[in-house]
Amino acid sequence: GAGVSQSPSNKVTEKGKDVELRCDPISGHTALYWYRQSLGQGLEFLIYFQGNSAPDKSGLPSDRFSAERTGGSVSTLTIQRTQQEDSAVYLCASSLDRVTTEAFFGQGTRLTVV
Amino acid sequence: AQTVTQSQPEMSVQEAETVTLSCTYDTSESDYYLFWYKQPPSRQMILVIRQEAYKQQNATENRFSVNFQKAAKSFSLKISDSQLGDAAMYFCAYRSRGAGNQFYFGTGTSLTVIP
Image (cartoon, each protein chain N blue to C red):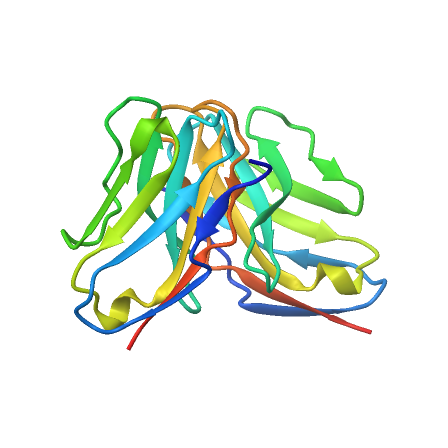
C-alpha cells in the first residue's frame, strides 16, 4: 500500500472485553513496530517484528497483550480482558529493514475502554 | 535503556518568527540516530529531520534545522519562519545503530503558532 494502514481508527470497548487492532505495513517493509501513546505521555514501545526473526516483546506491559505478524506482512495486536488503563492511541510503524533509519507511521487506533 | 527528555511540554511562537525546541538524551552508545517527528491532530507521525551521530554537520531540511551537541547529548530543533501548519506535537526520538532497533521517544512538545 501507499502508507501504513491501521484499523479501526477508533474503538470503544467495555472493560473486560478483548480487542484486536490491525496494522497493514507498507508493502515490502520487513520491520514493524507497535507503540502506545497515552494522554500526555510519549510513545511507549510495545513490540518489534523483523522479518522471520523472533519478535522483541520486551515492551509488552502484561500477558494480556500479544501480537502476531502473519506472512511477514499484516500484524494484529490483541488486548485481552481490557482495563481502563489500556485506553490510549496505539500506533504502528514500519521500516524497510532493520538498518534503514526511517520508520513510517500509521494514523493509529484510539482505544477507549469504558 | 536509553532515555529521551523534552523539558518543554508547550511552546508558542508568532507566525514568521523562529522557535527552538529542546531535547536531551542519555546513552552509552557512540553510534546512533536522532530524529524529530511531528504529530498533527490527524495523529500521523511525520519525520521532520534526522541526524546521524557520526556526522558533525548539523542536519537541515528547508526551514527546519538541528543543533546537535554530541558531548552534551543535546539535540534541539529550530523552526525558522514559522507557519500556521507547523502547529503540532513534536517528538524527539533516539534509535541505536546497533542491536535493538526500537525508537525511544520523548514526551513531546506541543507547539502553537500564533497568527
